Structure formats: C-alpha cells, structure tokens
Image (tube, rainbow, N blue to C red; front, side, top):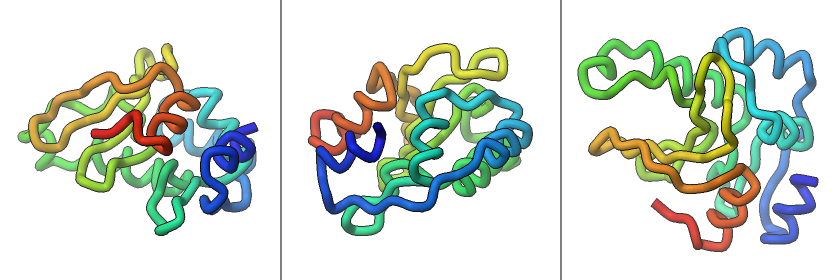
Length: 144
C-alpha cells in the first residue's frame, strides 16, 4: 500500500528492505512508546524512504531511534526547549525542523502530524495522517 502510494506520486523515490515485527518491538521498548500503525505498516514495506536526491522522506528505523533518544536525553536541549517526550520524530524538513507524531500516555493517540520549529521551539499541526503528510510533502502543498 505505502510503496504504491509513494510510487504513484513520484517513481524516483528509493526504498529499502522492510523491518521485522521484532525490530519494531525493540524500538517501542527502547523509546517507551507504541509506534503508530501507519508508521509500522510503512516501515514493514520499506525501512525508510529517500527522494531522488537521497534525502529522507521517512527515516529508517535506526534514525528514528537515535534521533528521538538524542532529543530526549541531550542536557543542553533541556535548557533551550520544551521537553520532547511527547513527540515521536520520524522525518525532518532539511532545515533543522523535525516532523513528528504526538505522544500521549506512551502511544500515539491521534494520527496528526506536527512540525517542531528548531528556531522558536513551536510545535505546529501540519497534517491529519501519515498518508496525507506524505502526499502533501511530495506534491508541495505541505511545507515548512
């Protein structure tokens, strides 16, 4: 489903071997969050998605883990920004801004997508779902 959706928008995008359920469970355990079904489904088709220039549209599982852990544990961030424990980053805008699902009580309660602005620490709603985010990001109706 996800690969067909993305290929239908742009056939130049690159995909990777899918992740396993066991890998997803390890990530959920390390991040202490239940990943949203839409993200799990996408990652089980392709471990991340790259555009024709090699830029991430959706991060690979390893980057999801490392970036989220870094944002949550970096001591200098604690003095600069509000906590990141309520966001699950899965992409970025290429300018320092990060794309995320909101987390509530250890899971993604809604499929909404937010952008975190690295300059002013704002968190702004940009989409109702992962699929609408991908469509809008790829066709240019969503930008940051």
